[in-house]
Image 1 (tube, rainbow, N blue to C red):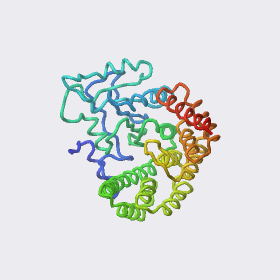
Image 2 (tube, rainbow, N blue to C red):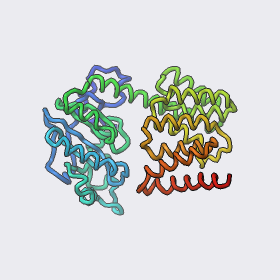
Image 3 (cartoon, rainbow, N blue to C red):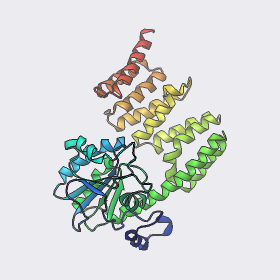
Image 4 (cartoon, rainbow, N blue to C red):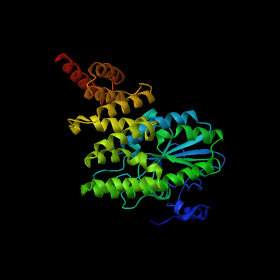
Length: 360
């Protein structure tokens, strides 16, 4: 990939080569805003002394449509302190799929009132300048992605728009530690590269059904980089089972619940769900471990997440705790009320639990 001249200065910053896998990193001067068309609002240029949020999205991206109203709320909240710009990138423009960013923005109505621009307005095999100079230069391959630019014109934060609240508030308040953020970003990027490489190696071993090798790869990786255990811990648990090492898996499962995932509701929920998942059709499993993981996850979310309560309900059911499973599932159904993609499934599971009780 060619590097635009405006990015070359970033290469001179005092970070080690291995810490700069991409030409644009947190702490670097932000590239210019160069778009093909301003769809909504006045053209925006980065201005010293003002905070900017530059967010990348596309008309075909479902998660982008979910994130846009949240960004809109923040744009209103910080109207006098930060300039928001939404830039559509990687639009799949063709004769069969014409350019439709203006129509999309119009359909969003009062949920998308900040400035909006398009990186490209015509079919092209190449990425537009915004995709090249911002997203690709920063190693960002997925959308939605937002960049916060501080008052000095430097990239202060890069991440998913739904996680932008705290860093944006700190940048606006002038309390953001840019040096610490830059170091963390460099560390995260490096760890991501190591994770991707290890993931490919583990996948190959699993495909070859060499479970012992897959476990060894994880253990060696974690020995070098302790942070990898949070990523591959669940894999290791199920690989131990595949390798016929159930007693080790039971001990390791407890380690995941009590230490590795102790403060992560999503990870605890995932571990529990994979143990009890009806699609897996496991007649046997460490359902007590699933209950412990789900109980911890429910506590962390203060019983306010319907999906996590559903996991606990199913774990209790599989563990034989029918009465409590029904009680928990009723709470899950109540929380899921009105959620078309979730409520029917949770109600069906509750009916299953009650039917099982009726047969006793």
